[in-house]
Length: 94
Image 1 (spheres, rainbow, N blue to C red):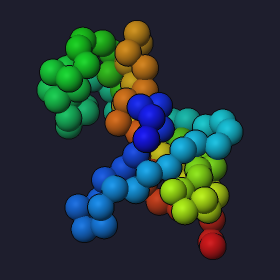
Image 2 (image 1 turned 90 degrees about the vertical axis):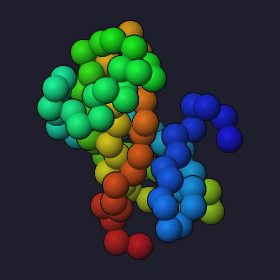
Image 3 (image 1 turned 90 degrees about the horizontal axis):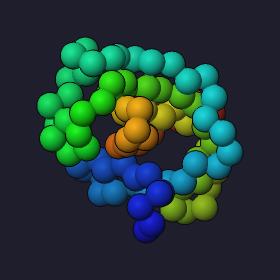
């Protein structure tokens, strides 16, 4: 799995690998700076920056080849980029 392919890990289900197909839409900021619970971890791993927790929707391709519409969450900072992308739930019924 290449580093530009985001993945999510569920403790009971192993790793869920996916890739984003197309654009991320409906992007919203959930939290900024000290409002982020994992801010200390982000600073330790990736360095200083104006960290934001973001959410959006996109089509994703699962490891099985199935394409689904899903809600995504990630952290980003200027000069660092998107980090720790994970999908939270499916938005379509399949």
